[in-house]
Length: 354
Image (cartoon, rainbow, N blue to C red):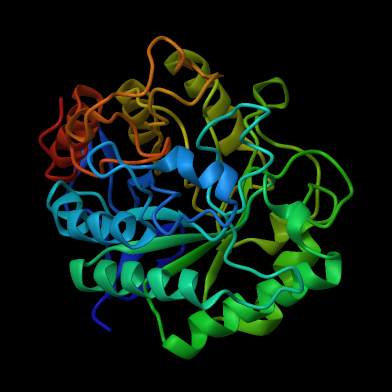
């Protein structure tokens, strides 16, 4: 293993050194931040033949899970050369096409119904984490996604899934991994909602000891300043607000309120899902908050946050495919939005951004 993630008070470290050494932006040090991108579909597959056909590559006419992972891994060193330090990868993926015919029927999960592991998913995850490790990058592993929770038999199966995934990571000896237990917890009393997710987090910590940094991302709720009630604040190592719906000025106000809350102080804040708007990246950097690029891509069938992804159909050529979430994915830096983000991260990481 070549990449070891650590935490020095509120600063993320890699191999004992604070990230982005010497870099600053508009008077704010960037040391200890973790600029990242949501690449949630990096190990995606679909066991439902009725929906699987929708993800066919335009150049081959078929879906290929191994190709998807291989092409993602090939890009990791390039992302890193642009200053990106982390990617979020999901064991249950994320929404590709948000239509009632497709979204509920996709069968994309690294777990069986009883919480045992699907070996093909974890073989792909191993390739991702190993490649990231060699590139000097961190993988934010997201365990649970609301579109796939229904596939578990019960809460006991979800606890088993968390145990098995955590033990797998520990057995592999990975040091470049941090956890996003549930993508966007929402208000409620369930095991993976605001009122109960602390039970899952504490369970994972019992399994992992001090071997993993653990967080859980919160649903973008600007009306309550991204700060829902719950006991998870005491359980996590870092906070993960999502900013999808907020314009830059609103995002600034929301972050300022967030950072002033006593439940947050003393812990790093890492947004791992926002938008394609680098203006929000700049706001986050000015406030000493790590920020995550989220590029859904056209053809998903809905407006998401600040962007209407219905303005055009999915691109017909592989070379032109937009986004990093609507499948199939071109993992290259092949669109104006992607180039703007990676160019900005490079400038920030080198202390050259204005």
